[in-house]
Each structure stands twice: as structure tokens, then as C-alpha cells.
Image (tube, rainbow, N blue to C red; front, side, top):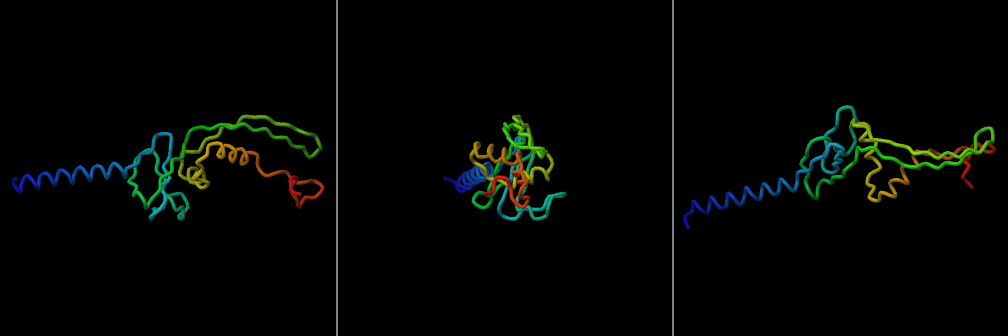
Length: 153
């Protein structure tokens, strides 16, 4: 076998391996999602706090180093959750509210950054329960003891 054929074959193998490595490292954000890339050093995004600690990618691809960086996908779709709240007004009237709330993460970096902070949430049921708690807000203050919440012992 000629040395030229060996060098040519080795070059083809190297190019194929580089292509496969690139494909394994390249991540693309779908139009309705954002990539949250953490690990290694991340450059600051204009208009967002300097110390995010993660990179936000929307609508394009990014090179991710496996083992050094971690990628999480954040959906930018509209979500809905049901609320069933029972409370008492300041006049002492019991009120029961049942509603469906539709919410969406904004497309700007600040909104995505705020939504990405509580990640990771692997369990969708747990995520829905956390969203419901956020929408309900803190428990009301006990009118008899303003320094305590109504549900505190």
C-alpha cells in the first residue's frame, strides 16, 4: 500500500471523527425554547446581571463541551395551571376562587434569566405544584396577630 493512500485514509478518518465530535457537541434551540448552558466561563449578556453563571441561547445553536458544561432546555410555550383558593376578606367574608391561569416566559433575556433560576425541575407534577404556589402568593397575615401568618402555629 502506498504511503499516499495511508495518509489519505487517515485524513478521511480524522475528518469524520471531527465531524462526529462537532455533532455531539452542537446543541440547537428550537423556536419555542431557550438553552440554559451552565459550567465553564460564560460571557455576560447585555442588559442582564453580570454574574448570571449561565449562558442563554435562543433561536440558534451553541457549542457545548460535554463533561464541562451542562445544557437545560426551558420551554417558552404558554402554560396553564388551575388555582383553587379559599380565603377570608378583611371584612370577614369567606371567598372561594377557582380559576385557570395562563402564563408564559417572556422572550427577552431578563425574563428567561428569571425563569431559569429555579431550574432544574425534572418532575412536571412538582413543577406545576411550584407554579401554583408562586401564583397563590404568601399566606395572608392573621388579623389578630399581624406579626404571624394565618397558617403559622
